Image: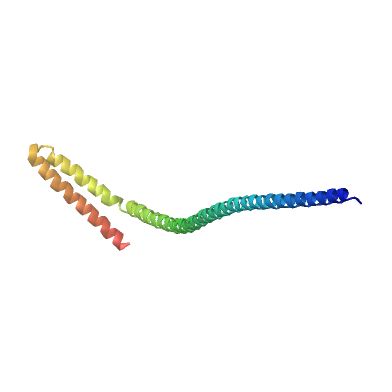
Length: 168
């Protein structure tokens, strides 16, 4: 081979090697830039993911607090409903007992009234007598005497009815 050809081949080989070194250097620089960009993207994705996870944890925390509060309120309402129901049942028992007691009192009173008709008739006669006696009176003297007489009759009637009730 000729020297020119050898020199041309050597120059070409050196040129190819230099070109290869330049390309390898360029690829290394580009690869580093790409890795750096990927790292930045990964950091950004990681930051976004961390923010999302933090926000999600806060939402879960708030949701748990609201749910716990709601459960406490529902339990309190259920407890209060039980109290109201117990009170209502107790009141109904008391009402039934009171109605029965009132029925007994009403029956007893009716019997006493029926048995005390003669006392009422006597009281009516006394009132008529008082009216007849006071027809001639006028003014403050009439009012004073009428009040005293009516009070006496009422006290006497109530006292006699009380005695009859106690005897029975």
